[in-house]
Amino acid sequence: MRLPITRLAAAASFFAFAIGLSNVVWSQGSPAERVINASPYVINADEALGNYVRTTAEAAIGEHCAGCHGADLTGQPGVPNLIDYDWLWGVTGMETNDVAPVMAIQQTMLYGVRNRDCPEDQMSYGACSDTRYSEMPGYGQLGFTEDQVNDLVEWVVDLSGGEADAAAVERAQATSGICAECHGADSYGYVPYGGPGLRDDIWLYGGDRDTIYDVIYNGRLGECPPWADTLDAATIKSLAVYIWNTSLGL
Ligand code: HEC
Ligand code: HEC
Image (tube, rainbow, N blue to C red):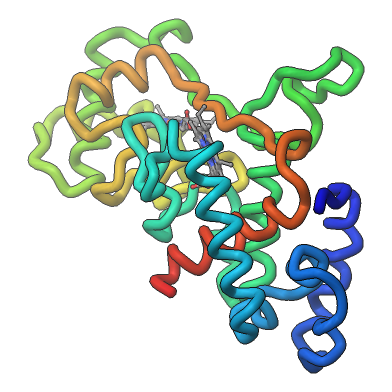
């Protein structure tokens, strides 16, 4: 059964409630309706709902996500691993409960990342309203010299724990301050802008010097399509719960 996406908004305000309510209240209605209204806690505690979420998510992944994120969701260069508990958008900082992270994953799925496929009057700051948006600038186009970019490459290699040219890392201090806006003050990443953490060996595009140079010199604008018009609310919710559960190792 196809349910309108607007139900999600209503569902959101119910989540807080649902945590405290007994399963009896939610035993009414089809599994799809119950999944939309139930919190991740209620879903995971109910075998029938858990099975519905897994079956629905796995079918949707095969049909809609596997082509980019891989059948096992571990990604490929330019497309993130969705189950490694390393987040580009939202989620980090919300882990004190299961509800907020699932909502953040839903936001990414509903409106996509850097979606610009909408009428002019629905655009806001160059992209569709509600889509995740930010830009990794191309510092070559912004006037950085090749030497400056090479120094920044060494800085990034050093941050991620690799063997770097110490003199170049030192020189990069002159420009690396501007990276904090999107990668965080200590380069651990900044999820409101989708800036990846640079202090680990997890790479969106790749950890070799050529790739890092290309990213810094030319910039990047990775895109995930929006799913609000393609998938119904129960499938979106199932995918979000499934991705969160799997990233937790459940
Ligand atoms: C056309 C390729 C493509 C398809 C199809 C696609 N994605 Fe994505 N997805 C991406 C890319 C690329 C990114 C990274 C965007 C960026 O650079 O921030 C992404 C990012 C995401 C993120 C954010 C991850 C994070 O770390 O915050 C989620 C969640 C996500 N996708 C879910 C899905 C789901 C669920 C599906 C299937 C319904 C799907 N995507 C289908 C390309 C795709
Ligand atoms: C205005 C925001 C912004 C600024 C400023 C910025 N970045 Fe980025 N950076 C991003 C975003 C967003 C991504 C991810 C791009 C994508 O998802 O397609 C990224 C990606 C990267 C990556 C790729 C990481 C990976 O895992 O593959 C590197 C390396 C990088 N940035 C280095 C830098 C450096 C060095 C600076 C400073 C000179 C910098 N960035 C400044 C937003 C920014």
